[in-house]
Structures are given as C-alpha cells and as structure tokens.
Length: 223
Image (cartoon, rainbow, N blue to C red):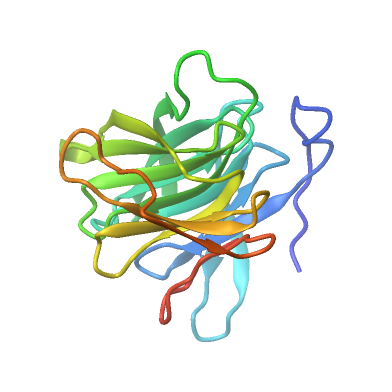
C-alpha cells in the first residue's frame, strides 16, 4: 500500500491526498496516479512480473487544479489530464526512457462566462484526432482538435443532454458518444459530427438512475 502526503490550496477538496485515478504508461513500465488532493501526478515504476510498484517521480499540476482522470494519446508520447477543480485540460509529454512527464499547455474546458463547474471525464477519439472532456455544472462536452505534435485547439462546447455528466464513452464505431448524466438519471446518445460543430444534439435518452459510468464490453474504463 502506498500513501501520498500533502494538500492543496482548495480547503474543501484538498485538505489531504486524494488519489483519484491511475493509468499504466503505453510501455507498461510505469503507473501514473492522478492525486486530486495534492495537485500531483505520482509516477511509480511497475514490475509486471510481480505487480509491485515503486515510487519513481512526480509531475506537478497547477495549484488548485485537482487532476482527476487521464488519457494517453495513441502515439504513446502524450498524456492529457482532466483537472476537476479549475476546469482545465493539461498536456504532458511522456519520456519513456526517463519515466518522466514534462508539463505543457493548459486550456479551459468551459465557455466564457460559465458558472460553477467541475471537469469529470476525458477520452480521445480512437485515431487521436480529437479530445473530449465533460463538464459537470456547465453540463457540456468540450471538444478539442489534436494537431501536429499533440497541440490542442478548442473546437466546440456542446450541451450533454442531461444534468451532471460524470462519465462518458465513445462508441466502438466512433459515431456516437454515450453520456452518463448522474443527477438527471439518464444516458444521452450524441452523434459525433465531422464538421466544426463536433457533436450534435442527443438523438436518444435512456433512463439510468444515478448513472455514473459507461463502459462498452471489452473496454476498461473509470468512474
């Protein structure tokens, strides 16, 4: 068992460590833990033969950002992090030789003038060409175009079709997004569009009380 230490500037949410999610690096050599409470990505060396993890390095998030969930680009060299508390997405370049993360750009996931909101989930399109992030409170999905070298360009922010999009998943055919709206208790099905609109209006809604997670068969997901 590993216990992180420290805190952050948000007195209500960062009074202590809060390891929110973990992801293996594409080379399976390291485990990265997003700790919302201490604004850190904690990197552990991973022994695939024994399952043991050993502290290796850390990468900082902005103070008060609250890193929550992560997604690796299919190239394996870029990690995108959804920061819950300041509603941003941050890019990190992964160095497999050193087992290190180098911080890069940080972009807002909210439209100008948005009220209180908290980032939840993050996913990349299978081809790595788009990045999607959900906003709880603003009740929207932010879409970014992933350019050369992994640079992000804001593309669109669209209503999610429900209240409190805690989690979402891209359908295996790449044509729809299924959103778990926790407070409205439903799943909304949104078409993915090729143009600048990026996502269309929900075409269907299914009742799902306290919906918190969507996982397609054969897919490993997170809450």
